[in-house]
Length: 303
Image (cartoon, helix red, strand yellow):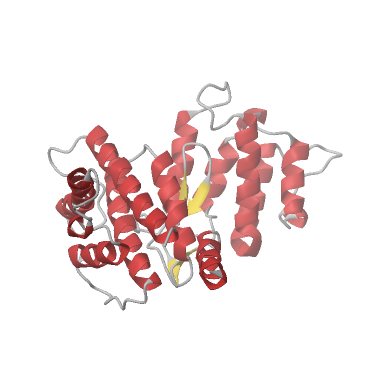
């Protein structure tokens, strides 16, 4: 019993050990061993600075504290005596400095985003909210392998590396997909990738070797079999057995059809939806795929 608890503790620890996002890599993303580059670029410097245009945004003192806390205080050109440059110039200069010394760039960007969220820049009901600025910033992060949610939360994108991210990569991406509403075409591809990664993770936990290019359907059959959730594994003597079998079969159908819809998008990294699939339908598919992924991971955790 102690050994079982320890193994489960280890599995849960992996849930919170590291993360991306899984989102299908886009043109312009540069990755090193599955880890995206630092979340800084000329475009990111410009778009983040835009939140401070004409004196808007968090105060000089708050952004100064951010720079110092992230280790870029010496790169801040601000002079309290002359009160120059303005906030927009300060932010642009320091983010560009983080491009040259990216070790703490993630901490810098996260801290800036915290201040922007507190100020209301990601709250559609706040006077400081500017949808175009938010969208421009999201696109800037996307181009370097990062995703900025509508709420101003930053997370990496790219294929899940189960060796380094493990269960955490799955759980964090699952939560991000649940929150996302933008770009249904891209989300549909991400949902398929999540489902495939979940199946591989389940098999890894059971010690089942998985070929790199294993078929999606085959992966899911093996994963379901190991978890005991194939319809034919349901005890026919159980009350509601037929209903349970139907539900389990439906859960597989969701995974199967998500994969097939993703296939209709082509083999490239385009985000267009398959003909006949509306944005709201794609979001429905994504939400249901998330529920199926969560069911499999919960079943695994319960042993």
